[in-house]
Length: 129
Figure 1 (tube, rainbow, N blue to C red):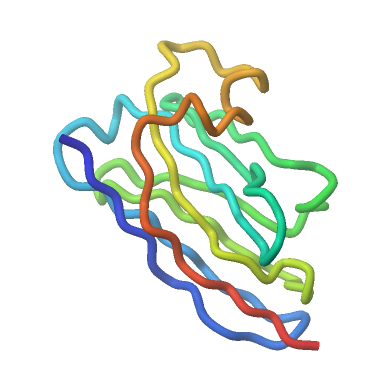
Figure 2: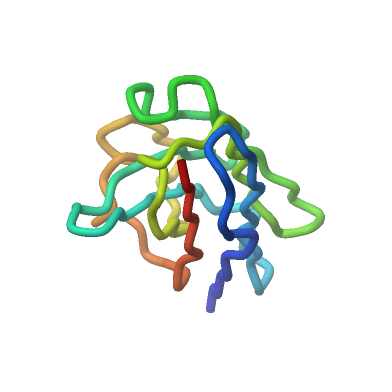
């Protein structure tokens, strides 16, 4: 059974940075495609960034605008999301999700939250102006 846990959230001022971590238990990490989603108050949960089993990266271009970076550390069973130049509109609960796309890394897959089998509880990111 795969379990994952997010950490690294907090409160920062606009322009600040945070580094979120999604840490996995179990031995299946290397076979998992992983993504970060976020949900702001009163809004639907949305895709932020994803990373495939073979290290392909994808981002929501509009919301991220080159400010975030996703990476994975297989020996540590961890996926990182570096958040730079944070703005108040980035305030949200950030969720880590994982699944196995069987080698098909396509936007129709990785952007669709219904296709993810495993989810964390989320970590709060609050950005003040």
